Image (cartoon, rainbow, N blue to C red):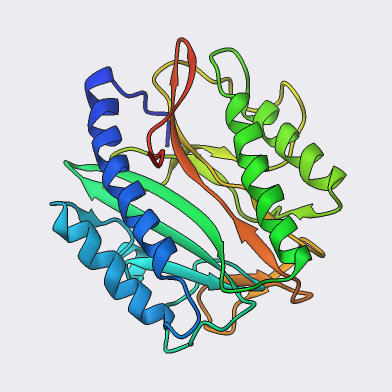
Amino acid sequence: MAIILKTQEEIEIIREGGIILAYAIKELEKMAKPGITTKELDRAAEALILSKGAKPGFKGYNGFPYSLCASVNENVVHGYPSNYVLKDGDIIGLDLGVFYKNFYTDMAITVPVGGVSFEAKRLINVTKKALRLGIKRVKPGNTVGDIGNTIQRFVEYQGFAVVRDLCGHGIGKNLHEDPKIPNFGKRGGGEKLVEGMVICIEPMVSAGNYVLRKSDDGYGYATRDNSLSAHFEHTIAITKKGPCILTGIN
């Protein structure tokens, strides 16, 4: 699939969907407390999206039956919502997509549940900052490798590891488009960033080794050494002036 550039009008539509998505994520973050099940969070996610006139972006995608990817502790991404009850000390990745006016947006955050360990807090903060640093590299003339290299160097300096087998992506009328956006790489490597691209940058970080296995639910991915993992993601447009975050939470 070739890289599909978006017009300013299309970017504005994606931004509208991104506002709906950011709203839903913000509400889910408030709900992620001890005692709630991940399936309850999924039902809430779908209701929040539908209430704003949009559709869940993930439901039915490649047969995925839910609206929300809920990944707890060592689970990195694509976790199945279930009857698992969140408990004090867990961390949960909330990954959600919206389909609005024929365009997708994609966003993820990792949330501490109740009181969590110092290491869990640090992992979440490092992953969140890695996303911010990666976004700063988004401007015409830079490359995909510049984004990945920045994320990788920061994460590894903090003593953590970036996941290698999964990556960010372009987005638009398809949930996953070119180019791929790895969280590692060489400066100046990979595709050049140009105005009109819309991409998803999503650092996935392990507190231990970056090698993955299939999750126990058989669908998602978890760290092979069962170390904690965190995940953050934004949908971003590349403009003349640099990055424009389309899923920003106000």
